[in-house]
Length: 436
Image (cartoon, rainbow, N blue to C red):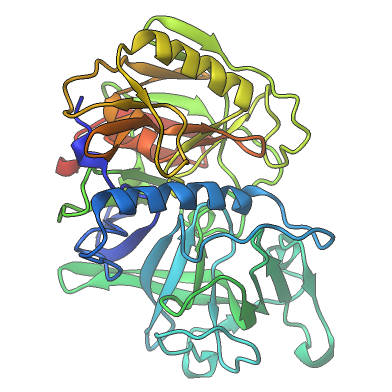
């Protein structure tokens, strides 16, 4: 059981764009938040502390998948937890923009001059008046109609004015526009993406910190960065890495994001509301040879996902843990208790409920756990389902949740995971991600 490699996986990852353009596709680095490659790296934080912090962000991030309401107060999420930060250039001449890349939202936006209400940011504010390629989007456009909240007239004339809110009560308001986004570095030929629809935010606030200047939506809705790319394809390969690793994961866009060949399996993306999220159908989980059918939850709190139906789980690269409905989770835990002959212990942090005493990666025989998606059986190894959280303890990295079911990134390590919005599929292919 190779557990030592996954001590601080991808609950928050920095996208460092060293892009290579070829045949309509490009590939970039994914830098783990807690690795030495990250600007947030803190050598005084232990591997185990980093991992537990990632677990807590998983629980907080679940609130991002609950649709915001003006009548209720949502729990706050940890700032920057569970997302990516993308380093891109916008406009002509190009200006650096650092945006949180969020698979759980659609709109691409950055803070813009004049900024009547803004959070503090380290990068300079984007000034649309200085860009020759900046164009506002009219109210009659399809892009404007795709917004849930938009207004026109008054001082703004025919410009579409957007208002976008998140489940953690963060918000952005401003002018909907189009602009050229450039991705590149000294080591690769720049990739220029013209006429990308984005929000030029003049009023912005919430849980954002000064590291970034906006957000880049990677969801499935029509305004997302992914949907605006030709074909709507992307894939990633998540490296099993400790906090000391200098190996970056990769994310690929366009034709470079196609996952196929021997060992690849595909499951259908389910279309449901809100259409931002990537819904899959999980039919069962097997612990060794014991198959456990997905159990319908009677919870009335599940907003984003209706348990016991098609599209009953969200796949998310930004959530570390896998979240399951309580009854189904209990069935899986019961099967693991029978299959694993080891001393049960308690997680000292109180986050994970199934833990075992273990002093090495070879003294516990962890069974293969298979996630049976509709049309795709994904066999998960020990590094996908258990993590060493203390020197002498390993814990199961799935937890119960009444609110939403999520297939998290620990379960996706060492798989090429490909999203194809055109074909409405998600594909999995076992891989050594250190070589991709």
